[in-house]
Length: 437
Image 1: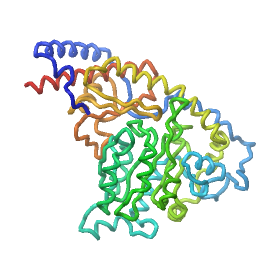
Image 2: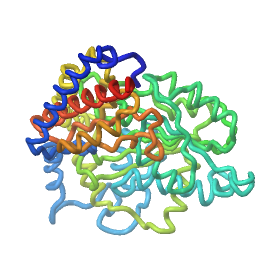
Image 3: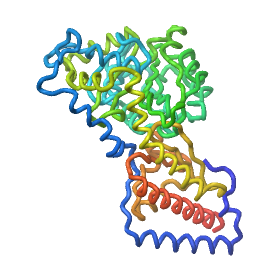
Image 4: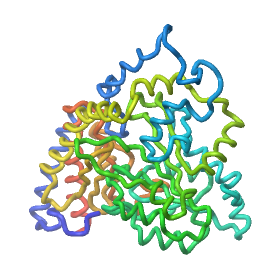
């Protein structure tokens, strides 16, 4: 969020009037171009999806459909086939026998896990849904680092859980605030985390942050860390960020039941057609398995087998992800180049410079984000809705915009970024004028 005066706030009335007129003319020139560009969501580009096309030929009518002793063409093996659980282990950082390999959506697993906590509780503790009745209507709460992932906030809101924002820092969530809230209130039952290349800031939690999460005192004995490691292998450069293993730290602290980790191959192979994983302590995995078996005999084991043979080990995953990086890196570098050329030194914006993941977090002047989004839409550029990175879509300062550079081709991305820069400058100039009025 901008706190210092930007160039438009520092101009004389005459200078500001001339700047606004020049910006208005540029806006009209762009409007006349009739652009139609989409930078709204972090989808892999078609070229990235094509990287995984060879996987479609891994299985055919003559293929061996066994994974060890498991017949992948029939019922059974609810937990996931052994080779897919080994892949899950390498991505989640916990032993294979503490993983489940399920359908294609980690978000759906998160919804089901949180629903289990809500309906029946966990590890012998009362259902979260009982808390309000037992405490005079006080709602269950979950901590939400902001700016953060809108779909996480939607899952908890769907269950009637109160989302409590906590600020993100360059080291992860503001741990002083997290520790204070978790220790003071037994209604605080958990925290959402995207620990590596966080959505949207791109921040990777430091080892100290991970340690404090594992070791901190919580008033709720059934406090849960929902560890969505969606971008665990999504490095843009050969030297990626290192994330501490929260399972090892939690085991050492005696809090292993606290951690529930998720990942999927949705941005590794085919979005919406990958495999999704959950990892937790033996006790939490066992109780989740027991609940899920009421409605699931086994997930798609042929898809698990296809993935395990296409990505048989960590080296294969890394080689595959280097191909993704080859497509993504120029797009992130274009974001940095365009924003720096158009906004550096103006005092109108700050933005993150992630080394992986799918997003850049952008902050303009206070009160600007919704207006910038609306102006971009008028000029033919669709952005993630302003406020989406905060619970309920409410960014109190109205500054944050999530930039998703992965899907457009490079010329379209550069054109969209030029429009964003122009919109930020035009709105900043108008806000400076309105301050004086």
